[in-house]
Image (cartoon, rainbow, N blue to C red; front, side, top):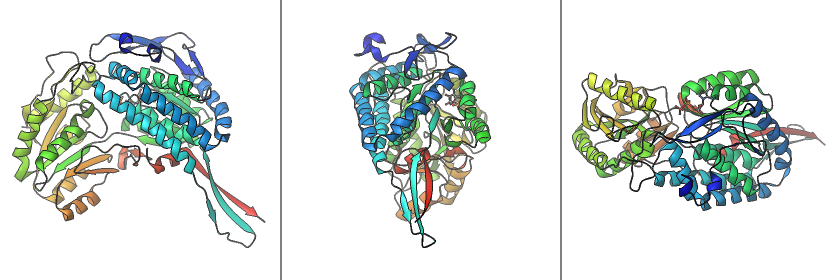
Length: 485
Ligand code: ADP
């Protein structure tokens, strides 16, 4: 990997705590592996609560002066950070692919996507407006100001090693908060590279720390029990989100939760089928099916079911599976053996229930955690895929008859993050977009992520929104001031 980098100093093996590049107090480390090759890239410090507490205290101190700067001054640092991320996009992409597995083109796309949050929120923080409210008594003047919430603790997953942190750190830092990131133990290197560039951009010492650790629950406890932390922002499974929400309750800590999804993708009989196939490919197979907005259940109206299955299978057969660092790869490995086992169990469950494999269905001949992109037909609501996120390259096709059935089936889940549908009839489009109980609806598109729109889920998919002007509110407190004149 080192030889691929134009700037090898972006690949660091120390953690960034309180403005210093350091080892764990007890010198322990853990390994970071390349999922495509299975080899160890390097080791990083395995930190615990004491180091996390130091990062939190440094963030508290640093944010005082940072929050006191003008928004424009903060924005200039954010802008520089954004510029450095884009200037180093190739290197950041290569580091990301090496530790996570997604194809290099996708990894570079993620760097641009992550950086866009740094740029956008740097700009947006200039527009944190308060309010004045006509007083309720003749001598009263009422105003509302918005202030940074305080030190933010962040826990993020491996599937977007850069963007998941950027989406949180962007708004938090831009409005004046201190920020302590604990990246997933599978993918700490992208986070550390972001810290190198933050430092170069002029981010004050201690304001932004990256605590690498293989002891996730210890770090989660420190975030929830340390009274200096005023906000927990988490992206990951609903299961872990529930644990963290429970822990955060003791301190009545504000939480943002981006949790699991179980995205429906509905193809109506009036859809443009070729466009629907393109959308399904983008939504289902991006990141090899390992995103929380990936289509998990594909509902196809009976009249176009067979035609859609055939076209989708053709597109899926054309996907090139391989090492993300090799030219022309469309789908990398899965993140772990456990992930492969889950995919296998979902496929087996469909076959046991009478479904069929149209293409794929097995481990890939490349071995390791590579898996064949798969299309399944004859999938029904009793099967595991209808209630659990597969998080892999499996497209299960369910058949439905009527519009209202599709809405009902799509909503029959505890999750409510992203949903998608393809149709042309304007009445139908209106009814379906309003009927879907989801935080995000893609209509005739399979790609919905952008920094300018509010990303987030309803039901058990989460709390809060990331991106857009709504995204800053999660890192602000409002203060009502009543002045007697
Ligand atoms: P994923 O399947 O994407 O890894 P998880 O919810 O298991 O989803 O993990 C998301 C992040 O939460 C990861 O960084 C993981 O290390 C971390 N994590 C897992 N368990 C806990 C916990 N009990 N407390 C805090 N963080 C946790």
